[in-house]
Image 1 (cartoon, rainbow, N blue to C red):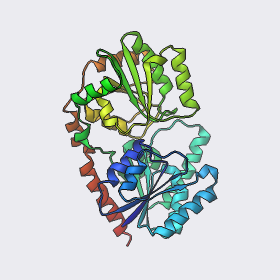
Image 2 (cartoon, rainbow, N blue to C red; image 1 turned 45 degrees about the horizontal axis):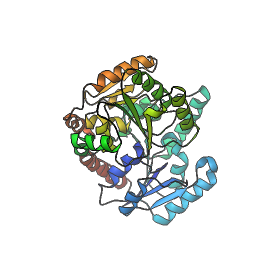
Image 3 (cartoon, rainbow, N blue to C red; image 1 turned 135 degrees about the horizontal axis):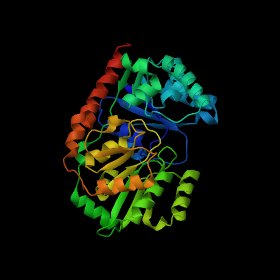
Image 4 (cartoon, rainbow, N blue to C red; image 1 turned 180 degrees about the vertical axis):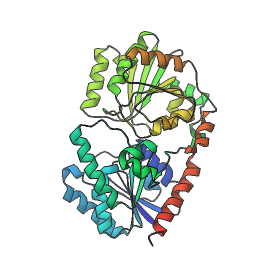
Length: 370
């Protein structure tokens, strides 16, 4: 059995880690990946290739729909896939159309985001695109209930037409380790008594790191503190974040660590996690922090479905930076909850259990269409 996963990149973001975690555990299905063409080699490409998967690059739709379609068609016709799983949400219509025209009977489209701020014109475009995407797909999927409702519609969700696949992880491997904490803090040059604020996410407007540095400026007024930011930006937004840090005179207390392959260890080094996202689906990162027992403060724009332990607290983005800072400092006094990984596993986020469910989902979807 062969399945093509269509996604943006494989550079360690939430969707990428979701795909790697699942595909590495399903041994009797051959997975290939079609990703948007770029010059950067994602950190997950090497381990995914080591599994025996092929990785193909295709042009962006924005660079030319015809070129994107032609590249996908070549991949699909040459490899004879049993199914295509498109991780582009309502923007997946072109990939689904290509799969349909190539005779692929099982066409899954997956939503990973919810409640994106949009203008009336953008909302109209989304609804039109969703209309075509839903009709070209044979199966609708989502990362959580909010993403299912917002992208595919409340009616489709309530009628059971959307399957929710949890962003599961290796719960045992993310559990808190005091040994890793000391090792990471030493290797990063963090002095004893330093209050470490952590953040993991692509540096972009969605993740709202401009607000993050403003919150951290308030935290640093009241503590010997450091902000560690994990994630890739590389564009104007990251430059604006760095400029803002300099304006606030806290640039020497912030480290931009870039993309890291040791996030599960790094979480041990943090005292609190701050996540002021403007919008999300069901963020993989907050499942990881809870598994580690790291206390987190998240914007209430994030779905409450992500809270599966006592280690997450929500706060409105309308609250002041001082309110956010006070909450972060309070939560940071809790230390790590070493048993929180059990709550995460019990809530359905253990990767071995959920990978078996995804395997069955693939087999049943493909079998039902001959």
